[in-house]
Length: 326
Image (cartoon, rainbow, N blue to C red):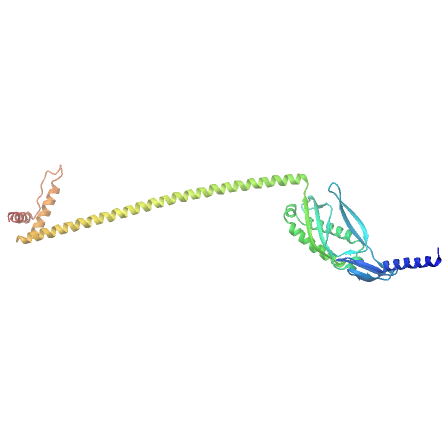
């Protein structure tokens, strides 16, 4: 082979290698840390970037990858990558045992959502960022759960998430990482504790049912007594109205009787006066006769009493006789 052709091929191959080493294509939402002779040089953005070959090199970062297994299990693998992903990353940590304030061992599974906001600090401020975040999350979770009872732990997920997010965000700020959310997937107390809690919940439900039944019976008794009271009030009101109506009827009857009697007296007085007799003597005589009739109407009345002024009565009777004769 011609030596000149070999040299040309070597030069072409060298040029291809130099160009491939000089061009770095970075995808969207990714970045690359470039070091020049072992020192930080620049941070490459998305797109095509040109570096000095063999002098500028990308600094690899340790990253955590998870793979689902055939039986639903999750496998974790760490590997070095030269491109840093700036998107939000989800870390699903394995179950860990924590101890509550009332000394109950509980298994908790947490999920962490974080995002790299400063690639340079994430590269140089921490040696293994994923492992550091995982360990920090586990220790912080133990501290937060250790300050709470089991019942409070089971009912305060939002509080735990908020506390964890605040702690992790403050701690990872130095690493150029922003912790967006922390979620607790599962909280699994021991089996005997779950059985005891189930019995407690069943007893609590029975207690609430008894309280509701008692309150229902109490409410029924109150309603029944109110009904009886209202019935008595209605009956009393009806009796009162009946008495009022009877009294009004009796008063109206008496008034009508008095009016009729007054009318009769006026007619008698007019007739007596028209005959030339004294109406007063006639009326007095009639009253005396009615009184004498009442005095002698009883079975045991054997004695007849004449009033002191009998002469007046007799004169009145004489006046009646004269009136009738006329």
